[in-house]
Amino acid sequence: MRLRHIDRIRAVAVLCMVEVHTAAILPPKGMTVGDPGAFIAAAFGGMAAPLFVMISGWGIHKSAIRRSLEGPTGSPGWVNWIVPRLAVLVFCQFLVNVLLNVERGGRFEWHTPGVLTLLAFASLVAPLLVRLTIRTRTSLLLMMAVSPIILGDASGLGWTWWDRVSSEGSAEWIARLLWNGTYPVVPWMFYIILGTLLHDTSGNRMIRERFIAIGIGMTLITIIFSFLRGIPWALTEGNAVLTFFPASTAFLVVSGTFALLAHRILEGDEVDGGDPWKGDSLSFLEPLGRVTLTVYVAHFAVLGAVALVMQGEPRLEFAPSFIATIGHTIIWIPIAILHQRHCPIICFEELLRRVSH
Image 1 (cartoon, helix red, strand yellow):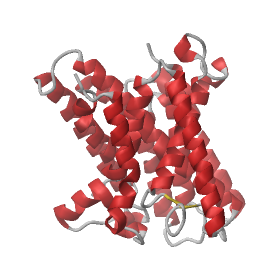
Image 2 (cartoon, helix red, strand yellow):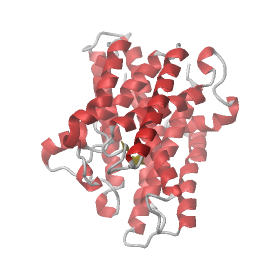
Image 3 (cartoon, one colour):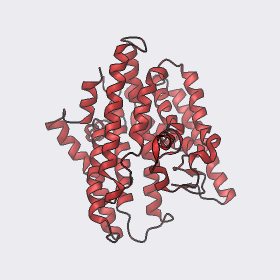
């Protein structure tokens, strides 16, 4: 049975990602990181990727469990499940990099590891994760949470965006993939593991709500710490309690908490046989939730064209920038509805289903 709240969460995650990526390509003139609008955009961005990766971890784990019932780890069936997923996800990552390439005003080198290579790695290790107990995976989750502290300077503290998306030679590319890129395996596997735990505790709300309560308490501690020390609470990068590049321990805990909270809200009573939050009133999001990988890739095609046109041009004023950002975000909802109604098999999700068997 397809869970409606999962499709809605996927839709919310990809919409947030579209919003923050569009805002990065079309920043309004004169806006600084201290402006309320910039803070709101950054908040959506900080929420988007963790939610997207967590719910992807949920889906990968669900699929891996289904596959594990058909044969032992290492069997040809597992190879047929893993290899096509790796191929499709890595291809999509390189396609994204080409669509928004730095040479045409974009943000990526053609070979930059990113969130899709992270999901490819998660697919690679899924046969191992599916065999681990909840307690063992919880221990791994905690290890990932403290890994930024252990990595220290190796994670690229003080690096610019361009340091993080560039690499010379295979050794640096592997480093970007594993610990100092935009979405490195360490610590971003935190969200994948969180997704597996979310799946396996779906029948026990008390455990998940306890995680949320603990996370909210730790979030308050980070806010108090920020106030007492007189340093910013959250920045994309730089000197702050929560940083996205590289992901700090506080960022992992806070964003993971809000990802779980978003899931709990949208879930409603569906796992108990009832309706997801708001019943049918949010059903318009579900078609988008079925094609998040396709929309993730496609929106970079749009942004790549915009970046090329805007290359060398002055920034837009606030109003047109805001309208363009919101418009480009919302438009994917009706596009997804029309897609699911008229050509649902033409998407990367359907390709993954057909080649992973």
